Image 1 (cartoon, rainbow, N blue to C red):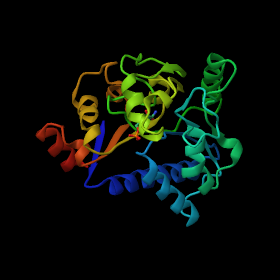
Image 2: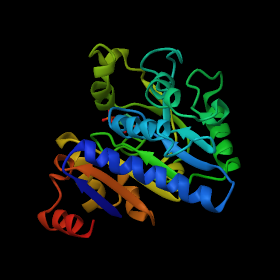
Image 3: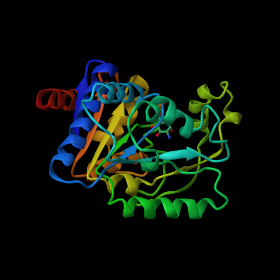
Length: 259
Ligand code: GLP
């Protein structure tokens, strides 16, 4: 695993945007096959999305041959709800880039049969050729997508019951009322993310420091689902200095020196 540590969130976000744009361009040079990109929501990727939108507007990268699959969506709130992950993605990225509407995939948290929706999502990912790159964030408890602690590291897309802690943390988007945060979500599984050729996870701020420490230095454990990254041949955690703040001094020095 690589750990990229930058002084600020901004610098790490811009690094990630350029990394993604370069990966898209590198594939386009060798094949006409689309680039398949997994995407997260949350406050973490916002600067990366802003940079990608800026680069697209400047003609430095195009998303015309990019297919996206989002990680997750709440169950039971309307797509048009300002805090649905549908709304978030169009507001922060899709409305600002040249991606064809048909290339965008987001789980439908209002599907009549949620299990069938999840199974169809896995099929669609497979049909697209699998992920070239999955961008992710991490929860304070080390969850990737909505794979809460004790999710199987072999899990696939499915219905998840959110932990009280996640509802509490996400209540900042729902009038600070955890009761208003949907109790369930649909989420790609840990194995769905880890099946990508490359995984890039962003982590910013001291609130994420414990999760980063567990994922990088702890055992591989369903307690911190991000720790599955240790088994990935091309996994990167890109963080700011505060998020690296609980790494051992030697680990910190190692990553600073090598990256
Ligand atoms: C939610 C999302 C995750 C995200 C996490 C962290 O739980 N399902 O994909 O990584 O929140 O959110 P934030 O980036 O706002 O800290």
